Every structure is written in C-alpha cells, then in structure tokens.
Image (cartoon, rainbow over all chains, first blue to last red; front, top):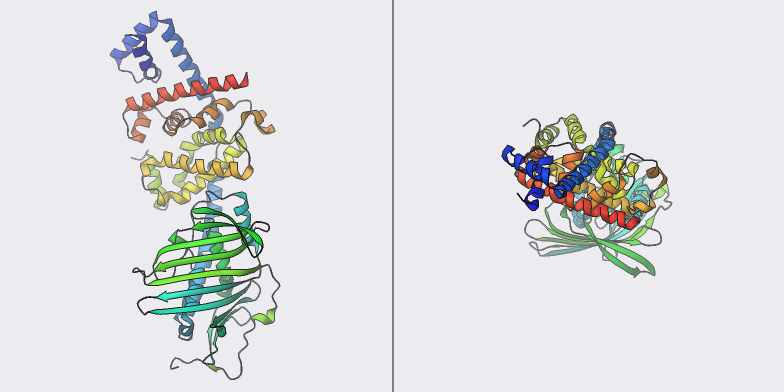
Length: 332
Length: 173
C-alpha cells in the first residue's frame, strides 16, 4: 500500500467502517509511515474539534420554544381562517342575490379581492422596506380606494366596464359606489349599525337588504388589506422604480394564481403593486387575469387613489334609501 | 420504519403534532450550528433555528420527498438566514462580532463559519455525522447512498474544512 491509497482509507479507519483485511493493511502502512501518521493525527484533531463544538449545541433545547411557537401560530391561523370563511359567506350571499346580478362585474371583482388564498408561502425575498409596507397596510384603520375594471366574457361576447369607489371603516363598515359610463349604478353598504348588507340599484330604483350577523360584517372590511399583504407572501419579482403623480414608487410583480380565488378557475394572473418609496404605503395595484378553464373570462383592474388612515364619518355609512326606491322582489 | 424521519413526518400529518419533537431533537444541534456559522451570533442562530422548525412544521404537507427532510430543512434554514442577514443588515463576519459572541467561549466560531461555507452535500454530511450524531451507515441509509460514498464525501469535507480553516488563519495573521 502506498501513501495515496492509505490516505484514501483514513476516514474509513477513523469512522470504523473499514473491512478487517483492509484495516490491517492500512495499520501496517501507518506503522512505518510518519507522513500518513501525521495526516491521521490531523483528521483526528479536526474530528475532535467537530465533536467538541457539537456538544455546545447539544446542551441547548429548542423543543419547548418551537412547540410553543407552533401552538401560537396555529391559533392565529385558525382565527384568520375563520375570518376568511366569514368573508366568503358574505360575498357569496351578495353574489347569489338577484339584485346584484344587475351589477355583476362589480360584485365579481369584489369577490376576487376578498377571496384570497388563506396562507401564503414564505416571506423569502422580503426586504426591510417591503416588510414596512406589509406592516403599514396591516395597521391601517379607515381607507379609501378607486377601482377601474374591464371584464370580458368571450363566450357571451360581452365587455363590461365598471368603476367603483370603496370606503372601508373598521368602526362603521363598508360602502362601495359603482359607476358605469360616469353614472352611479350601484351602492352597496355593509352596515355595522344595521347589521345588514344593503344594495341600491339606481337605474331601476330598487334596493335589497340581506341581514348579516355583526361579526361577519366586521370581517369584511379586511378584504383589500389582506389581498395586498398576500403580495409579500408569494414569490415576487422586483420591478424597480418609477414616478406616479410626482411620487417615486417601487414595484413588485406576482404571477402566483393562488394569490386570489374567485367563483371561476383562475388560469393565469399578473399582479403589480406600486408603493410610495417615501411613505411605504401602496399607491397603485394592477391585476390582470384570465380564467374559467377555457380563457373565456378576462378581467383587468386598476386600484388607485388610495387614501390610507382617513377620517370617515358614521353618516357616510348609513344606508340612504330614497323614498321612491322599492324593495327588490324575486319576481322583479 | 419507526426511526426514520419519514415515520415522524407521517405521524405529524396524521394528527400527532407532538411527534415533531423527535425531529426537533434530531436536527436542532445541526441546524443551530449551521445557522451560527451563517449569522455569527448564537442567539440569532437559535432564533433562526426556531423559525426554521416552525416553518418546516407548517410546510410538512408540501414536502414531496419525505426522505429528504434534512436537506429540505436546511433549505428553509438558508432562506431564514438570508432574511435575517438582509433584515438586520449584518453580515457574518467573525472579526466584527457583537459582544454576546465574545462571551461564548465554548463555541468554535471559525469552525462553524467554515462549515457554513462548505458545498451543500459536504455540509449536510458533516452536520449529520457530528451535530446530529449519526453514524456513516445511518447517513448512508438516510441519504440513500452507499457507505463508501458517505465516507468519500466526508473525506472531501474534511479536506475542504482544513483548507477553509487554514485560509482563516492566514487572514488572521
């Protein structure tokens, strides 16, 4: 046995996995070779050093700390999951309502915003600035935004455009004003005071009232906040910076269809979120997706004019039903 | 097999979350040592190891190759470490250690840093062998490779470690 052959076997000797016959050959070589002896000694020293360092870590127990964190996290996820289930119930009721068929585009878009994936992936890739955005959105109280959407249903050869203004207050509820061709078409209140979802369809002067437990209405205003937060929990790519309305913004783009769920299958999705570099608040959100398993639904939406943490009066959320509006009946 | 990672993962997924404790016990030292090498701070490493285990627990259902739990766990740890480094803007620099680290007389910082710099397959074997106290045969079984391959990889890992440690000494001179 020469030195090269011996050195190749030293780890096996050290690890005690060398077959007996080879062991004897290696040991015989070692007796007469100081170079290989020195090599073995170096390996033993390193092995000793590794064992000694590993002992410093084996004294630490992470078991209880990890298990406690898992229990806490599980309870938070359960609460969030229940809240999302409640949100789904509300919007399902609205969508199944006959009156809202008149303004289907607005309703579908809202449902998509609310029906987000329960748990995102890891926060991998989140930088300090983006973590700040997520925190700002999370801590926001009342806020306002504008939505402009175009929905195309190729099977029906139908294109609908709808603009909405959405007002959200954790204290009073939600109000959505939907416009078509510059005219107000629908107003929907999620009123905490009245414990109901009230929708007014202006062109036909009808209204509808769906009673709703308070806790379910309280759950609803979280919608767009939750949606924006999900951006940081799926894989995203950075879009760099640009100027919008004189403000420097930085953007990210996502393509994970799990980001949203709707009452149809989402096949492909592009979402872009632009955030004010100075304030770390979102200023523009753009979504575009194709769905229904055959690409027959195409919806593109732009959410902008965000006003975060605004003062909103209680009266603004009180359903204002004009006297000449009639209750919508199933026969209408 | 009751002793395999796969067995404990299945138990967790079948509604016995307490079985996750065994996986924590098995890999906590390996994971913490690796993270200490990346983060250069023992308390950060412990915090990151906790975070890694929590993420792993909630991601178990998504783990496709259950027999690759260990590699998967280190993949998560790597992402957690990157996030911590990015968030704290603190690079793993032995020359620039915080006060806390200086008091950790027992920990072999240069060694941990060298382990963190090893190529993935070598590092996994070193961590399993010394920090998870597994024999070469157990590692071979776990990683589904012949014992000879394990010892060869271990031999190369030793060589690389010695090189990294001697480079470290050179820098210190």
